[in-house]
Image (cartoon, rainbow, N blue to C red; front, side, top):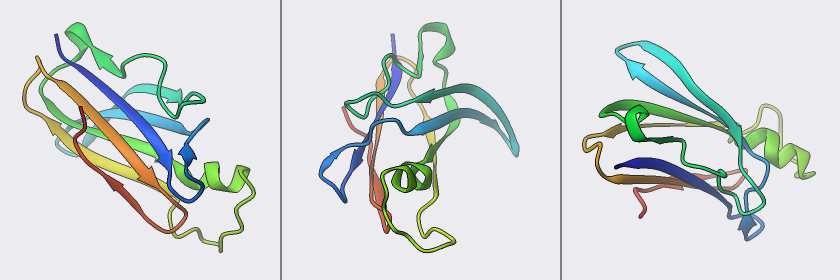
Length: 117
């Protein structure tokens, strides 16, 4: 069975993004349904898959990472408003039998993602 996982890397400090709040939404047109709210662990990962089993379905999803709050809590001096604050990643799941891993590499000034393994 397929599953959805994520992790966050703090590229400004060269370490996992620990304690970052995130939400997962399922999209249906313009409607968003909150599926999960969680925090990353000390390794920058979630303790369990965000979706798996019968809950893991094809469709469009959105992950919202509270990166700005993370950097503020770490004492990073960033201007207001923050350049990178909430990072919103919209992506599609086409194969409910596959593993979709959506990592986030983030700093106060940039971010990137990719479909990992």
